[in-house]
Length: 190
Image 1 (cartoon, rainbow, N blue to C red):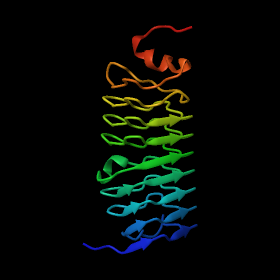
Image 2: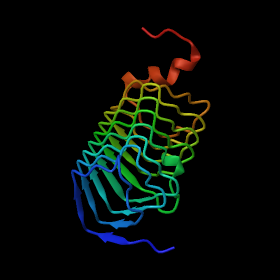
Image 3: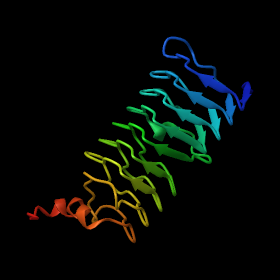
């Protein structure tokens, strides 16, 4: 099936929460201050796009292609990135709220999360090799059978990561973050 193509267009202050979002290919487009909450974005393709100050909470991402997409100051509550198309999946997040988002089994090498709220986000069985978590709140985030080799957690906080059930070889942590690696031992750190 062939979908329309939108190239290098700016979509600003649009509300798609009450009307349907056009299933299409979006290349080099910018979305600014748009409301896409609870919107069905299934089968859309976003390549080299930027979302700024948008609300995509609980949007449906079934087979959605997200390729080199940046999210800046966006509300992304409950997004199921694990439902996205795997081919060339690449994202970058800056100052986003990703409460309850899911990256279950998602391969995301060198992804960057900067100043993000990742509370209760699911990273189970994800591949986060060489990823950066800069100033991120990871309270309640789930890491189970997650590959975080060479990832950088030095400035992040509130994480609990069990080294016995995750791959963390050469991952970087600050001394202040060591408590999050020892919680499973049920010891008291003073």
